Length: 637
Image: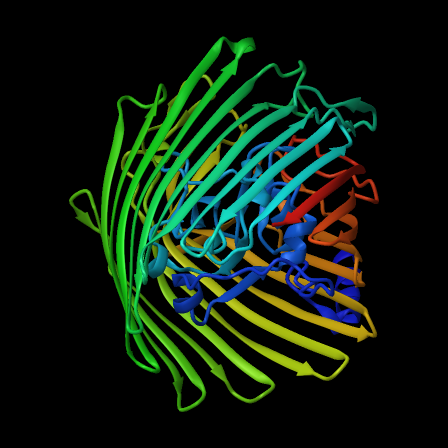
C-alpha cells in the first residue's frame, strides 16, 4: 500500500521526474564559470546513463560530505553505519566493491576492502561530480562493474581568482569550516582548500520497546587539505601537481542492541599525490599521470583489548593518447600499470599485487547524421594471470528532435580484494578465502529520452532498463546466528531493473519553478546452482523500490528546495530479517547578497524534517530532525 501511494504521487509529478536535484540546473544570478575537462567519461562513455550534479546543488551541499550529497541527490544507495560512519556507495543493486570512485581519472577504491568511505570526502573539494550508471570495465578497469562515481577538479588555468570562506553550525554540536583560494593566470595557477568537520552526533532515538535513549560514542573530527598547482610547460602542454591529505577520527557508535556503551574508535589518514602532464594539438591529445594513494586505519576497542592497524598503498602510472582521425572519427589508446599493497595484523604477511592493462576505444560521431558509436577493448594482466578480454559497445541516437536512444553493453570484472583473500579475525570470527575467483560477467543498459521545450516550459522524460549478470560474485555472508562471517563465490549474481526519470521547469518572469521525481525498481539475487537446480537468495540491503521527489523555487538571489526520499524494505540477513521501509524529507533555503565582486550566502538546512525513525544498516540508529545553518563568503579577485 505504501509503495502504491508513493507510485501514484510519482505519476502525479511526472511533469518533473529527475535524478536527485538535477531540477535545479539554472541559477538566475551569475555563478562562477566551470570548465569541464574532456575525460574518458565525457567522450567515450557513450550509451551509458550519466547524471551530472549541477553547480547549484553542489553549492547547497558544500558543507556536507559526499555521502550526504549522493544520498539526497542521486539514485546511488549509500549504506551508512550511522551518521559519519562507514558510508559505502552502491549502484543498481551491486556491491560497494563494484562501484568505482574515480578521482581525476584514477580509481581510488581501497585494494584491501574494495570500497571508498564517502563520509570522508568533503563535497566542497570537488568541482565536477557525476555518476555513471552501468558497467564501465573497459574504461576504468576492475571495480566498475555496476557503475562509477566521478569527482574532478575544474580547469585551474581558466578558472577565476577568488577567495572563499565558509562556516556552519548545526544540531548535535555539528561544526564545519572551509577556507579556499585560487590564484594565478593563464600560465600558472594554484588552488588551496582546507576543510574542517566536527560532530558529537548525540541524538535521541527509540529502542524497539519505544523507550528514548541518547546515542553515545558517535562523534567525529576531520581535517582535510587539498592543494593543486598547474603551469604551462609550453604553448600546448601543461603539468599539474596535486596533494590531498586528510585525517578522519571517528568513534564507533553504540549499536541499538548493545548491552554496554561502545568505547571503540578508529583513526583514518589518507595521503594522495598526483602528477599529471598533458599535451594537446589539433589532432592529438596525450596524457600521462603518476599517482600515489596511501591509507592508514588504526582501530582500537579497549573493551576487548583489541587494536590493529591496516595500511594500503597504490602506485598508478598511466599514459593515453587520443587521435583525431577526421572530423567524426577518433581513437584513444592507453596503458596502465598499478601496484597495490595491503598490510594488516589480520593478514599473515604483506599482500601485494601488480596489474598491467592496455585499452583502446574507437568513436564515430554523427554517423548518418543520427548515430554516435563507441567500441572499446581492455586486457588486464594480474601478476602472471590474464583476465578475460573486456569488450564494450555504446550507442546513442537522435531518432528525432524529441526522441533519443542510448544503449551500452559491456563485459565487466572485479578482482578479489586483499580482505576477501587473506583476512583472518578470530575475535569477530571473520575469515577470507584465498581460493576466490575474480568476478566476471556482462552489463546491459538501454533507454529512451524525450525532450519537449517551449519559451516558458521544458519537460524531459527518461526510461532506462538495466541488467547485470555476473558469475563468481564475491560475497561476505553471515552465519545463521550472525556470529561468524565468511566470503565465497556465488555461482551467479543477477540484477535487473528499470528507472524512470523526468524533469519539468516552468519559468515565470524571474521565477523558476521546478518539480521532479525519480523511480527505480531493482531486483538483485544470488543464484546458486546445485546439480541442475537453481536456488535464488536475496542480496543484502537492496531496496526493490526507491522513489526520489523534489520541488524547488528560484529567484535571482534566493532559492528553496524540498527533497523526499522513499526506500522500500531491505533484506538484512537471516538473523535480522527485513529492515522496514522509510522516507526522509529534507528542506533547504538559500539567500545570496551580492555587493561588487563579493557575495555573502546564507543557507538553512532542515534534515529529516518529518522526524522519521529509521535504520539504513541493521542495528545502527540514524538521527531524527536536525538543523544546520551556514554562511559562505566569496570574493572574486
